[in-house]
Amino acid sequence: MSGHSSLSSDQPLPSRRSRLEERRRRREARTRRGALWVVVWVVVLLVVAWVVAVVVSGAQAARALQRVADQVPVLEQQVRDEDFTAATATAAGLDEDAAAADRATRQFPYRLAEHVPWVGDQLSAVRGGAHAAALLTAPLPQALQTAGNVVSDGLVSADQAVDVAGLAQLTPIVTDYRTRIAQARESLHAGESPAVLSLISDRLDPVTAQLDEIAGPLDTAAQVLPQLPSLLGADGARTYLVAFTNPAEIRPVQGIVGAYAYLSVDQGKISLTTTGTDGDLYDARADVSAVGPEFAALYGEDASLVQNLTVGGSADEAGVLASSLVTDAGLPAPDVVVFVDPVGLGQLLGPDHAALELGPFGQVATADVARVLMYDAYVTYGANQAARKAFLAATSAAAFQAVLSDGLSTATLDGAQEAVDSGHLAVWSSRPAEQAALETAGVAGVLGEPVDGTVHVGLTNTEPSKLDYWVQPAFDLSAPCAAGGTARGSLTLTLTNTVPEDIPDYVANATARTALGERTAQQTVSLWVAPWVGLEGASVNGQPVATAVDSEGGWRLVRLTVDVPPGAPAVVQWTFSGSAESLPRTVTGPTTALAPTVTAAACTP
Image (cartoon, rainbow, N blue to C red; front, top):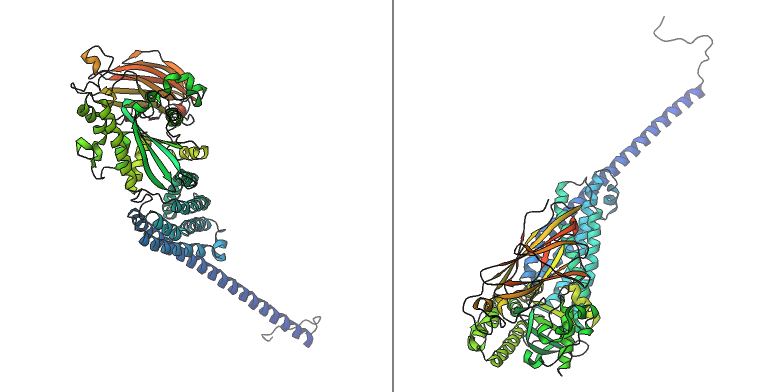
């Protein structure tokens, strides 16, 4: 037998045609396999190209975003230094880099890769950061250039003219940026995922937090800026009444009105027209009903007197009363009323301001302005009240003019914020739209709507004296430890009177019969608390006391009276109950010459 197989007798020999067909089939199979490999290689090449494109786009975006991150602190410092030329150039570079990162992460391969599990989470987060950066940096060069043109010489120039046109230029920029902030926050939040690597989230999360933090103030600015031109006389001259108050004889809104000044504001030009003292207003009466029936029922006709214009809880009420009073006295009806006291003037001027020339007191540092106006003047002028009042009117107006003459520098704006926050500066407008903007900006000094966790305290001098200059309030807050459920809490107010033994007669308690009584201040302590908070009781020096409970502006108003002799602090305590989130955790006021201190005591189980 040979090594070849033999065909059985019943198997036909393959025909030439069948052999050709077999070879054809084999060739087609090889062709199909070759085509398949071509397809496989094409797919591989496409995938590789896609991956490379994604990697390149990601690398480009990463490098661009890193350059943005590196330059942001530089830009911040340039803006603080008011070097707007350099800041504009830096912002242009930021815009270019952020736009490059945004373009890189918007390419089709990159967007397609976002659908890949886990990898897509990382890419989406980076794209969200890149898009947010592009949104925020795009308007910066033009915005900073405009800001430089507007504020480089101060919004208030040396000739006391406000750049109203400049403010109008800033309005659309702020409005646009408010929209961009909202879009950037949305972009960043859309890229958030628990799967995002900390390497990425640690970079993006602080940006998200910062945007969340500034969104509110920017929204406020966008609402307030459109009203500023009219407040500054862009559509006609406006009359401002500046009421200089004195917390040495304290009221819930700063203190008793002791002097006043009229300003004319026309097309941003600010000019002082007249000054006067409360003596000009003794015979005038404010229309208490103009504030409303609730106010009239709470404070009565006593609030119509110049001494009591600021006796209510809100500066807008005091503004209405002041306007009514000066009109009754034959003076011009003001469009705007500004309440400011010596503490507020010192804050507006700032600690680094040049000393003021204050007549017999010579050069007075701004830190000493409050002391000169609230104590030294009483020592120097003694019984000559006419001379002292004239001095107070002139020096208060001079200090206020010094603020305007400096321009709205960063220091002045910081001082204004401090004065507003501490209650020593408040502004009221007779126009509802402007008043709404002032309230939104937080400079109107109003109680606002009751809110959870917040109480307000005010003091009213109920015996004629100037002893409140030495009264130091200190608060101890005890809030519940738990965040939910029903709980109890307390607020303790300690009033300490540091008055010296030797004081001018005019400063002393005028109704006292003893030496100690002359140095004893008597206060009505007012507490405004949300009406849904339960008030369990009040005590003075550990003894339960009765309180007068009323309502004002939607708040529950609780009042009691205490004597504050020197060397024996008066301790007032209120205890509360209710839902844990509604109990007091924050306290504002009173507007004493000595700033209140607040201490968080141990929480209540």
